[in-house]
Structures are given as C-alpha cells and as structure tokens.
Length: 240
Image (cartoon, rainbow, N blue to C red; front, side, top):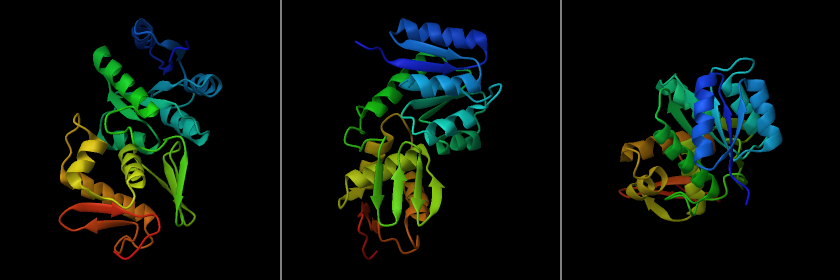
C-alpha cells in the first residue's frame, strides 16, 4: 500500500532532518528540499499529499512557492512553518492558500497533530468537514466562479483571494444551500472545538465574503441574513 508522502522544504538542516526523522517514524514517506526552487520542483513532480513549507528560503521564498503551487492547481495540503507569528503574516499565508500556519519554535507533537488534521481535511474526513464539497474542484453561481485549489474566486472579472476560513465557510454555505444556518452551528461545523471564535467571528467573515461575491454587499442576494438566527445562502439569489 502506498504511504502518504510529505515534502519538507526547510533550509535549516538540523530542523529539516529532525522533521524528516519524526515523520518517517510515524510511517510517512518523506521528501526533502533545502531551497525554494528545488522544493517547488519536487512538489510539482512528485505530487506529495502534504508540504511543510518554511517561509524564509534561499533562492525562492516560501510564499512564492505556495503561490506557484496553487496556480498549478496542486491539491497538496500546505502547512507553513515560520518564525514570523504576527497576525498579518498568518493572514497573508492563508490568503496565498496555506492550510495551516505553525509558528517556530513548535513541538513535534503539536506538528504531528496538525499534519494529521490537515491530511484529514484534505480527504474530507475531519470532524465537521465531512459533508463539505471537494476542495480540489470549482463551483460557479451567478457571475462568481470559485477555485478551491487556488483559494480564489472571480466575480465579474475581478479576482479575489480567500483565506482558509473564508473558503471553508463559503464551501459550507454551498453544500447547505437554501438552509437557514444559525451561528452556533456554523461555529461548530466550520471552526470546530479546537478554536475559540465567537459569533462575531461569523459575522465578520460573512461581511468579507459579501464584498467578494455580491454585486451590492449592502443589499446581498446570495448570502442573506435571517434576523435573530443566522444566514441563508442561495446560488440564484433573491431579495435580501
């Protein structure tokens, strides 16, 4: 039986070797690269299921590698490993298409859990994500075309990047089209028990999505508010 392949792109040799040894001990097949150019070439040629990607790489930086992977429609899950832990850095990583973002230093145990969670999400087997549409495909409604692999959507010719949570939330609305979804259900099914969002988090993400999918975000027709409850999504649109 084929083993799951993980590509480690990390220029710090000691860390790269430690990661590779730990992953092999868990039964994964591990590929290694010490710079961005070789890492990208390996990823495109070998098609690993998951990539551990450092941001500060010689030759080609990690965000450039990630962008190239998503533009090539790579379906690999990508976990960024970085010493930069500010909110802007994390947001930028997710907007480029990362599945997770781990700040250095980290424990091998934490990383192992994140690796398995990312692989489970990619297979559609993670808690709360089982009914979600295939993240490798596309969806279209009205003037909007969503590219799940590239973490982007195009609306009327304008291209917008999507953060990981924006994409997951939009995918969830697509799968549950026509249903009135209360905020607590959205928190449970999209964010899950291991995160600490509030209902305000849902509202903020909905506002961001409306700016990208609606012709008039102030008068939404696809993603409408059900007052006192939550939200309802329809592809065809209607009166808010």
